[in-house]
Each structure stands twice: as structure tokens, then as C-alpha cells.
Length: 50
Image (cartoon, rainbow, N blue to C red; front, side, top):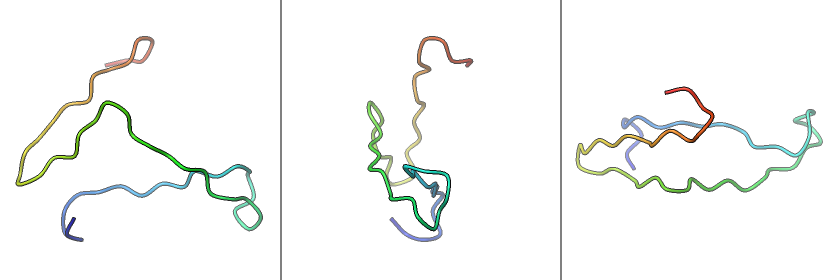
């Protein structure tokens, strides 16, 4: 991925204090990675608003 392409960063931590918390692995499920200007929509999970 190029740095000028849209992307997101977010912390996944096992505690509230970022100084003492450890990172927690995260994996997207059911979502592909678009390339070459392709777009995609993420299907909404039951119980979550559209």
C-alpha cells in the first residue's frame, strides 16, 4: 500500500493505560483488500445499524 492511499490506524490494547498495555492482534474477517482503485462494501452484521 502506498502512503497516499486511504487507510486506517487504530490501537487494540489489553488495558486502558497505553504505557503498560500490550497490543492485541486484530484480523478483518470477510473483507477483501481492494486494489487498483476497486471499491467494496462491508456487509452489515446482524444487530448493527446500516
